Image (spheres, helix red, strand yellow):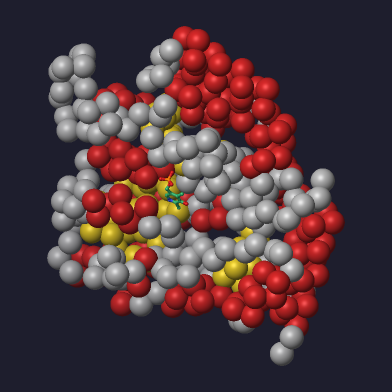
Length: 376
Ligand SMILES: *Cc1c(COP(=O)(O)O)cnc(C)c1O
């Protein structure tokens, strides 16, 4: 199939599973249980099985998954939460909207994942500012899981919790452990452009043991107790629509194959580009879900222009780190500056990445990048 190169191709995917999707949506229209219908339960059970966890609580978005998780962890106003400065805004927003204080740590310059040593520095910065540190949110940026082994020992040493923002990494793993089971609590997103996306907003929380499950299920429905009119805690309306659960069940039928195809696309990019630009580094024991394929280049503006001229879409995740954003720059930063986050923000460029990128299109992209970066 030829046509313009897409950054993410949801059309080809839909053509493959259209019948399954139509059938699943029709079933919802037939039974009419649009809120908390049987597909929601079926999806939660499937996801728990895939991740090898005790409980999955679906919810209305990845952002709600973070907010619900923080409510269940009992984050108090004024408490600090350590997180990377180089991430999507929702990570910090979830903390700040509850009155918590995001404290930004730096990233590893090769993986773009939160650096456990910088986390230690951020804890010190927060404490010297007089803050109580409640926990750490690690972010599996671009699809690769963070270093949960190192992070959990830091968390344990300081008596704080560790929460995984796995919005970009569902389908990935580390040392054979699936994303969802790498931290006591993980949040993911089913926003359409994520590796597993629905046709709207959606998200889920993963628990490796069930103790927080009852409060999360209650928080998701206004803090419900015994019944609808018994409210035992302050919650939100954070449910996943039955229709979105149905769509995700259809998409799961090809998800493993899509992850494999993404990995093949990534490996072809690495082969074609590693001698020309900085390509993604994935740790030997890690499997990325390849939400993004992100290169680093010094002359980003020119490269974007050259690629755009040839009809190749690109994206920059993220051009402004959170600690430089208007709404977040007053929050504390580990050691006062985040050198690697600042540098990455000026150099990263994400290339088209999806399971259906043809080798011909990919080779064209690789050649275009090679030429654009070699120009003085
Ligand atoms: C997408 C994303 C979120 C938020 O997910 P939504 O479903 O869009 O609310 C949170 N954190 C990260 C790192 C993300 O990439």
